[in-house]
Structure formats: structure tokens, C-alpha cells
Image (cartoon, rainbow, N blue to C red; front, side, top):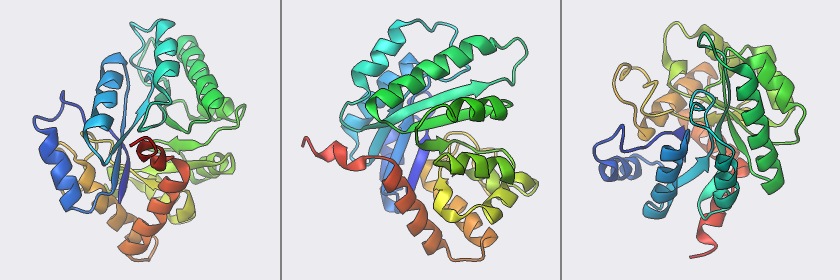
Length: 256
């Protein structure tokens, strides 16, 4: 199994070594840790060096732009081709909070998309209360990646997959009242789905309300299998193939 999106940082976990060992014991093949600001991006660079199953993406989250300046673009370009860095993210748009500077979010999003295009890197996209603007911007680019924690309709899901994107599905799909994402999973071909946890957030049932872990991605796979009337092993096989087709995991070992 591959957890294609999590935040495995010391801010949230007292013993990352222990979490990694539990991942290995529970059949986790790879984990992608996504940065959101300068501090977490620096930690991503250390994590990919320390742990063999950890890969990373670097990016600046739309709700973390208060201290953002143009030197951050230089940082991204300097490190985006580092060993073990497999994409640009977590980037995107978030209009959830009152007073959001939408213009700034769009500018920063587009500049990071330009960098992803320049270096031919997939992207991890955050979109909250902004899905139409997110789509309208992405269709201007020839990129690939994951629409993280997808929350749109089946119709919107198809628009993104037609652009070449995968839909990141996490613990929310296990929630009883999460009707929209359940419908998406039922109606979107599994070749367009990626497993993720967004750890430490959004723990699946029966662990909802506790800190999430990457190995809980298995519970996501179980729910997807149930919704699609197939077996968990098939969901794991296809979603792993999807992730390996999207991200260049091999590059981490080319220099060893």
C-alpha cells in the first residue's frame, strides 16, 4: 500500500521512528509526506533522507501564506529535484475563511504550477470551497497529480480526471454521512483513485477523532472495495499501480 498524502511531522508525532516501523509491519510500501510552509518543507527534506519508505513533496499551502515572500519560490526550485522529492505540494486554493486574500492565493498557486511545469513534476492540490477556480486554473496547464482529499461531485471528478489528474481518497470515505465522496468512488473508475490518509487528520472509522497514521490507509482501501463490490487486494493493487505511475519513486535510489 502507498499513502500518497500525509504530514508526518514532529509537531504531530512524538516518535516518528515508531510510526515508520508500524507502517512497515502493516504493509505500507511507501509514504509521501507533503510540506505546507517553510518549516514543514525543511522537515520533509530530512525525512526523505532518514527513512527508506518516505518520499516527499514540497510546496506552500494556501492558508500558510502570511509570511510568504518571493525567496520561497527560489527554495522550491533549489530543492524540487532533490533525491526523494517526487512532486510539488501541498498547493492550491482555500476560500473557506472569511477575509481570504484570493488574489494572493491564485498568484502563489500559479507560480508553483509554473515550477512544476518547468521541472515536469506532479502536483498535490488542495482545494476547499474553491473547486471551480481550481479547475479553471489547472486546465490552463499540462500537468498531472492528485486532487487531494477530493470533495467535489462525480461530474467535477470526471472533469479533473479528463485533465489527467487522480482523485485522492482518504478517511472521510468511511464516514456514514459522507455521501458525496461515496458516490464519487462508486462512479469513478478505480484507475483514477489514489489512497491517502492526510495524517494526522481525518482518521477513518473506527479511529475517527484520534490522530491518524499512514497505515490506516488500509481501512480506506477496505471501504473503497466495499463501495465498488470488489476485494481489498484488488483496490490495493490498482491504487499502488496508480501511484507508481504518477510519482517517480525510482529516482530516490538512482543515486545510492
